[in-house]
Amino acid sequence: MGLDKNIIDRWHNSEILLLGGSAGSFKLLFSLVKLFPSNLNKTVIIIMHRKKNFVSEVEKLFAKNSRMFLKEIGDKDEISRNAIYIAPANYHVLIENQDQFSLDVSEAVWYSKPSIDITFESAAEVFKDRCTAILLSGANQDGAMGLLKLRNVGSLTIAQDPADAEMREMPAEAININAADYVLTGSQIFELLKE
Image 1 (tube, rainbow, N blue to C red):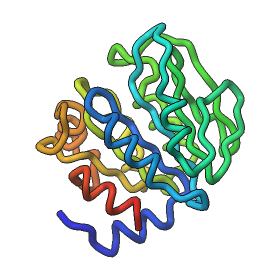
Image 2 (image 1 turned 120 degrees about the horizontal axis):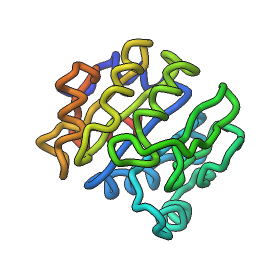
Image 3 (image 1 turned 60 degrees about the vertical axis):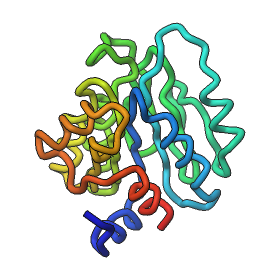
Image 4 (image 1 turned 135 degrees about the horizontal axis):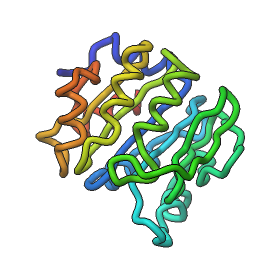
């Protein structure tokens, strides 16, 4: 499926971009972080599965290559436009209201903390149809139910084509439960977000 006018218009009308990924998603996420202009006029939230108790250089690497302001999410941080936020390891990220994140230390979901499902579901409650959400490569089912909830409230939902993903399970589960409006390859996702 190519990029029709509908998907481009819905992307343009979104205020929030949610990117969820696990194993095999790093390269695409890194390319996207480098792609965004400083004046994107959207909020970008990245939920990437991280190793527990493992000091990561991800934020430094992303920040060094981003034209947008980029930071790891802290509890009660403000949500701003023209910023990229990355979910920290060992916490779930909740969107408390239109202006604020909160961090949660409850049990892992699908062996993952941060959980993509938890952030996607809280975004669905707060932002409804003002989101674009993309579920990328990953080796479990995290994110699929959250993507479905987003689709049900009118968000634009996209799953990476499993044939194009390094780990097909995550996007395949989203497609399986009919959570994705569109199924796109990595290069089509890149092309859309460049629009």
